[in-house]
View 1: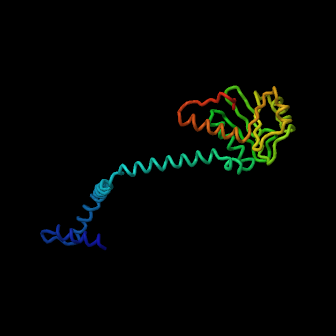
View 2: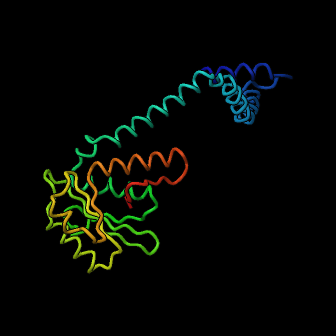
View 3: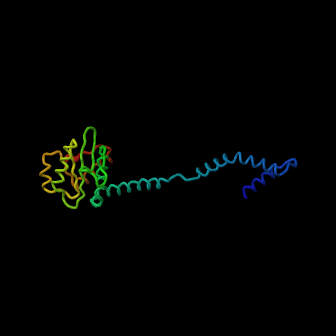
Length: 213
């Protein structure tokens, strides 16, 4: 109604030589429809320019918030509780993610049907079979023997056996001298820390004491 009233007022202002109000109204309406979009753009641009620029304090707070989120993520990823809370398939996917960050292509088996291999890592011509165990007790030598057989039959370069709760002495005895790498949850945290460090420094991180890949 307010817009109609505006058109009527404009029509009365444009009324001249005794022309009917309706004709003047239609003339004013046509003018307003023609300039309306342009006028809207001008008004919108003006309103946008009225928005105050972000203050230095707001910028610093935004940067601080990003750092806090990054630290919380790092703290979670490097917590024994976080890794230990995962079920078997979650654990496999998290391990695969760590190796992806190191440049490996990964294939994670479907839950409940690994056929002796949970993850296949590839890097160039290298193929690695990975078995992950989230058992509440240390892994025994039977698992290591099965993995070794799968590694040989599948023509893998090496194998990695990862256990949340370590290995029995029989596993260490069996894998001695074989291309099978044993990793505990503590080793996984070390890998995660090394990856975070290399990412923050922008360079490849190596460990002189132990070969993790």
